Amino acid sequence: MRIHKFTHSCIYIEDDDVSILFDPGSYTAKEKSLDIDNLPSLDYILITHEHADHFDIHLIKKILDKFPDAKIITNHSVKKLLSNERIHSSTTQADFMWISNHKHEKVLGPDVMNWGFNIKNKIFNPGDSYEFDKSQTSEILLLPIQAPWGHMVQAVEKALSVKPRYVIPVHDWHWREEARQALYEQAESVLGKEDITFIKDIEKVPFEYK
Image (cartoon, rainbow, N blue to C red):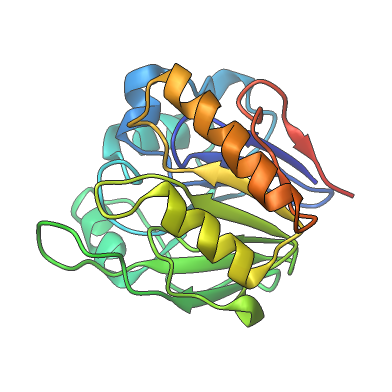
């Protein structure tokens, strides 16, 4: 399994028999970090929830122009938004994944439906939620590390409680690069004491998991 990050919460996974893109959102589009033409394949687009930083309809349309057969799996509220654009999606999980419903952390606005995805019991994406437990996680946790609704201490404490083998930080566009690197070094040190590896350079070097 090879895991790439394209800004914030946009994660691309290549495995032997499937390729997946999580949450192509507005920050990924703004930074132009996802070069669609360089994606070797795409079988699934998985969208955790409808907030723009996870769901950018214009970017999704561009992705589907290149990969018209890619299947979109998401929750019912995002499905409705996609239907308004005449884009087909499904709320039914594929046979290699497990979908779970997790309450989105508190925001200054209406509540939204938020889904978590467990891929092959190897990697878990909770979306914008810390309301999950060890039984729902995998060896690799995509951990929202910073947000208007959360903060790094809360994130690291969550990782310590569920004890994945690896943490890949997501939801971090709001930080300047200098702040991100300094705080990632702190997280690496704290989690390392519990034998949890913090993958801090994934935007430069894809993470390979065997």
